[in-house]
Amino acid sequence: MNNDSNPPKDSSITWTRVRAIFNDPAPPDHVWQSQFDGFDEKLEQMAQTPYDQIDFGDLWYYHHDLAYSELQPELFAWLFPVCLMDWDQTLQNSESCSHGDSEFHYGILQGKVFTTMLSSRQLEEVTLFFRDSLLKRVRSETRLLEIRNELPSFGWLYRFNSLGVILPDICPIWEGLWSLEHPGQAIAAIQYFSALLYFDDENPLFELWDNIELNFWDNDSFIFGTGWTKNNANYLTTNLTVEFVNDLIRQAAVLLSNTTESQIAERIKNDLPGCQALLRERVKELPEILRNPDITGWTV
Image (cartoon, rainbow, N blue to C red; front, side, top):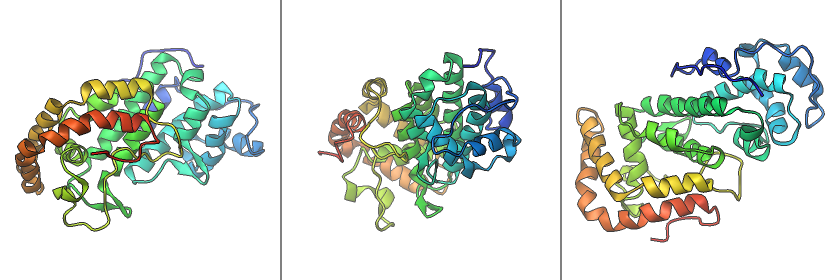
């Protein structure tokens, strides 16, 4: 585990930032870690490659090690920033953070990486990196619904749900997303919270699109049979309220008032009075759905 230093304050997504979390590590002089599938030479190759020239596809080897191998601290400090930059790139491209049959979130959860390899300061900085990468993604949105890499633009929420499974504290992510400091965040708010207001076939967001639905509880990880942590589900139970959703939808409509999305945002805002009964049920139900992966959809 790396020693603590003053955390980086930069909110941009850069190599400088992710490497600062690990005190700008040098490449390990010697690799003693055994690669899970027997490809020790690939770990040695990545240790000898400049960090910004490592092929993200080669993280297949390291994702498996995160899940199943004893991790060498020096190699972890060298490669985990690469994993974080891959996390950001796949999010921006609407792709899962996976390579072949390996997957980042699964490796983190299975290997208990956050508790065994990160200090409290490093975990805080990694969490803020996830937050800022998500903000980068949602702030790039200009339309409430468009196709990006053959996937709907609201795919960012599946990555958000993956964080609810692996992070011990979702609070910084939640508060950052819904600060509504940018029109893209307002678009994300309409995308996310409109699913609490309507029955599936009544959401005006999807009227012009065939075969598209928004499943609030899905994530983009390879984790199956495990839902949000108890702490994160409890946080959502406390902070996802009828009042919160109403206020956020109204604020989002104002923020989008001079954009191409103003008409549908205003329509959803005007629908709020007639949606309160369903909203009351769904703000209670969503934390339980996210907590329990055996629940596969709304009961109301």
